[in-house]
Image (cartoon, rainbow, N blue to C red):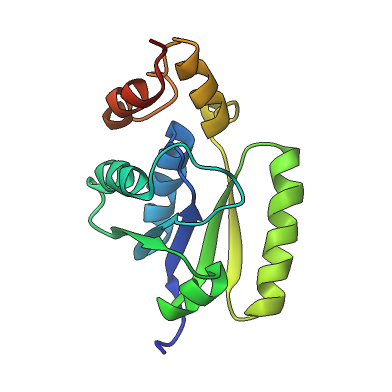
Length: 165
């Protein structure tokens, strides 16, 4: 096992689909850490709309401008995956108080499982607080425009998958 490194962080998620909020957290985290590993979760508590391959491909496109980011799929317990990658930090984004309640519970559980791994919360930028993957899917399924909520590389993929008729 690699020694844990506080200059290397993981940013996990289902990214179903990736949003401007996810991209914002990634961009800000790249300035805070020497290396950021974005982890696309295979199994999540939520039923995913996009396949793991689609989510991985979109996330690789979003992260392409950042030389200190790599994207990979993970299907293990988050803290175990973080330790296996030698990371000492988990990055999580927060939009609202409801996010904090859930994320606090997860951070405390992760601390019990791997006390040496810290969780760092990044507050969403003001323009991203209303954005969620669920909202984007609903807008797309009803024929609405998603361009203002997702990275440009994701628009056609979301439309092809979710646009009505």
